[in-house]
Image (cartoon, rainbow, N blue to C red; front, side, top):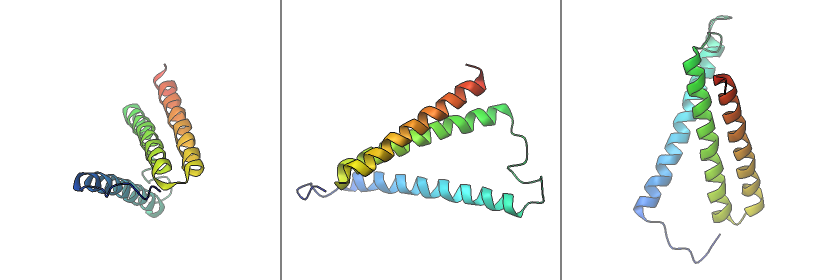
Length: 111
């Protein structure tokens, strides 16, 4: 960490909080979906119902964007934390995940 870095301003803190809130919402939504699946009768949960192709495309696109976001967060943490190697590796792995999502998305769309 840079001991000479200026204190964050209100705008920066708001941006960070908004990002953390978005991560919390995503986590809560995923947990709710997982709980609905666990509570459903066999073969009737949200994971058992066939998704329309447009929804699969939307999920794969959103997942690619999410992986890209996580790569960006890891890159910033690498710069800010003094733990360059660890967070740089995470950023690299998230970029690989982003690329894998993009490939899956394109393959599903027949590109």
